[in-house]
Image 1 (cartoon, rainbow, N blue to C red):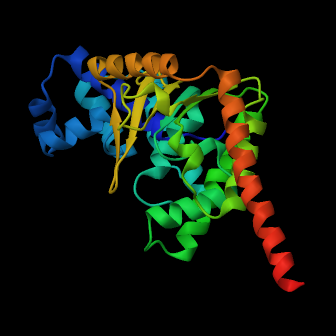
Image 2: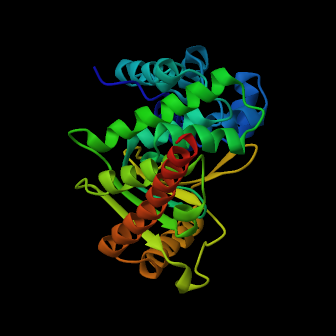
Length: 299
């Protein structure tokens, strides 16, 4: 059975309700007066910023004059599924709005992820992810840390699924050299990037230092193309205290241009894997050197 995606169901319902209001010729204020609520509540319902319960759906159908039983049943089903746990049931509450992001990612047919300082999320090993999350969230509880690491590793299974999304991982060369964890963690991490980079739907590119400044060099982001007809394209920005979603056509156009320019500034996929292998070998040498030094000390 396919997993319910509550984020997309909520957005689909929001679009249907907005279309029904427009067809009725009513304003947000008029609907709010009929529903005995604030105009802000109606606006949030129509943008998917808040859930809609089945009672509201029933009352809105009455207000808009929608009497077709099939249509009403479809809307009630969307309202019910929009309130189901979805991935939250599998991963637990990850804090912030990460569960919402995972719903978008789960529905994506194409993912372009650009990172300036770290290895892109779907390529990370468990040890690297743990050290990274702990470093960026020093006060995170052990339970939440375990939950986030587990979710990050499980998400990678989509890349090996029978119908995986297209995943284009773009990273600044700094991500290869910034030590997260110890040298062994980095060696294993770069091995993992090389392994996943060989998958047929995965492309990895590195932007070299010698390229100088380039578009979005200070602005990591994820560009998702989804199956949701109400939001076929979404840009996700992860901020310190929250995540932000961009959906306006003019904003999306800027990020589409950024992707094209970043790809052009990057090494080719083949050259990128060679650069990653070189960085991996450098960390491997550090690991070997430490092992040799430890052996000499013991002897």
